[in-house]
Image 1 (cartoon, helix red, strand yellow):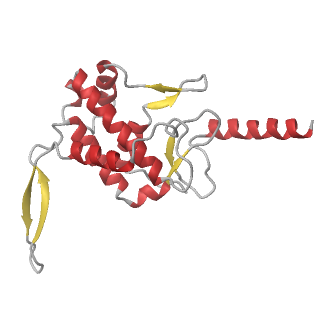
Image 2 (cartoon, one colour; image 1 turned 90 degrees about the vertical axis):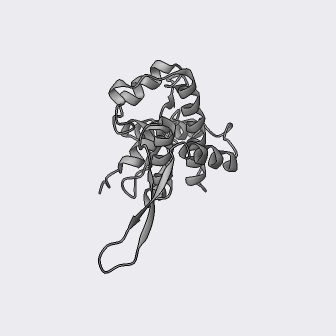
Image 3 (cartoon, rainbow, N blue to C red; image 1 turned 45 degrees about the vertical axis):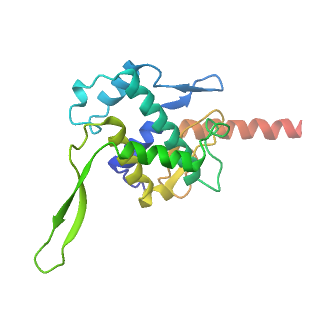
Length: 199
């Protein structure tokens, strides 16, 4: 049974998936120019309130790429003891550095304490953003933190089909790959490997 993917999980995954297989055995980066980030944000209107009018600059691109490196390092930690994505295996940030980058990005949105005191219950204080969604990296970092602290994190897997560099959320107990085409590639590779061993 396919479990729904929450908004924060989808956003965190989509950011990580801007590193993808390039079709030649390597990895490609979908965020190499400010225009790439502009298009990505506009395709994800849940990121910022005015995503349709967003235009990225070089500093925002650098900040999002730094955040993405932290996200992929933390995804690699989350899938342990399994192997991380092959795209990350040799260039992962140390976990403390990844956590520091994620928290610093999240801190770019100032918050204020808000009191909630419903009838028949004690007072409760929560933090609320002063200007929600104005800083791109902060909005992305908040989504990633929410995802990593949720039960959805336990469903996170790295796809190990030949040439795949993606992470995915496991939808059912027998799922091994991010998409059917990866499963087909893995089965073909196993078939060829068995025939080489018997030949």
